[in-house]
Length: 209
Ligand SMILES: Cc1cc2nc3c(=O)[nH]c(=O)nc-3n(C[C@H](O)[C@H](O)[C@H](O)COP(=O)(O)O)c2cc1C
Image 1 (tube, rainbow, N blue to C red):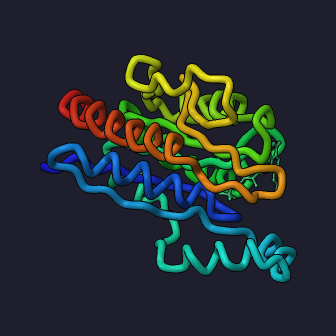
Image 2 (image 1 turned 30 degrees about the horizontal axis):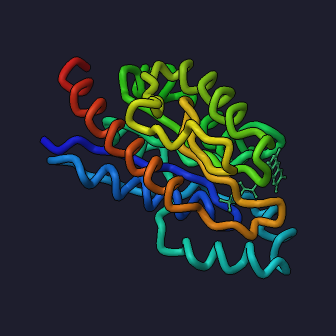
């Protein structure tokens, strides 16, 4: 049976959405996989507060055909790759709400032994790329998932002083203080490799679950 990979992400301005597409491309390079991209539900308060922000509105329109994530999606998946933009150095409340309401899955150990990884985006270079990835590990470890990183050997582009994404903990991109940057080719390349890596590990782990 095909290895099923889920990519749940939240994206206010589109950067993480684009990274999610690159991750999915990488997943599709692996044989016998099925990939599903789902977006984390937006808060009504944020939608209202941002309704005059043309960048937000445009980015939300761009994602309108992506299905909203359900907890059934998490049960369906053999591997889960989370797209998490930085909010004050850690995950957005929208993502936390999705996890906090998944207590039933935690209680039944539904996600235990599944491969997982994260990709992220920050406004600035030092605004929380690593902290967002590392702090996200805490809830995911409670769910019993098994982490896949982005090793230097396969991703030598990380060894740079340029303002690009990628760390041993996650694929990433720097959106810019005003969100004016787009994910660079190198960010997308590493995101794709992360997708492929998770697909391979998830395929191997599913035989053990
Ligand atoms: C409430 C809020 C808090 C943020 N906190 C940070 C931060 O701590 N560090 C940082 O570099 N960027 C921060 N940002 C910028 C976002 O991380 C950036 O807009 C996001 O990575 C872009 O991804 P997206 O286009 O997928 O939404 C913040 C943005 C918002 C709206």
